[in-house]
Image (tube, rainbow, N blue to C red; front, side, top):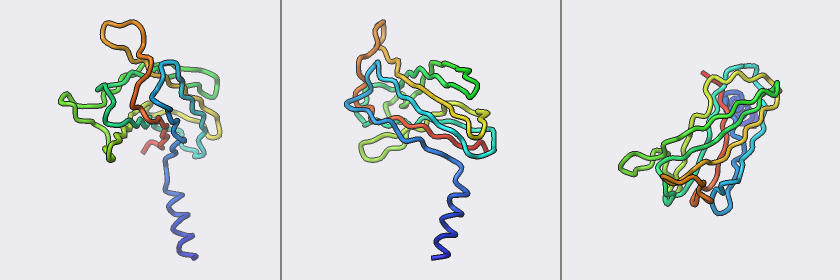
Length: 155
């Protein structure tokens, strides 16, 4: 029992990442559906990398995804970006990790984030997908399952 407890504590002390509970979509990602994450960091390290964990099934109709992101820092400063992520090769093969009929992508969101211990950070994300030569957004990104946020200490 003592050995198991030591192994557990060793594993927890070596864990340098934090996965925020994924936001699950019901029937795809609607154009007006905003995903929000709040988090803090408990380590005194100030440099972190943030990743988005996007999961979709193999019937997702696009080779990419456009996301509009906003992060609010501890001093209420906010930064908004429009990001494009390529999800498949030109031949249609998915780039993410394949698990049966699900594809999981670990997408770099921010590198070398300077985060302060015990401060609250907020991130909001919405999709911004449009068909070619169309002004209006796609009303629903079918086959998108969930979106998570992973925070890792920069090593």
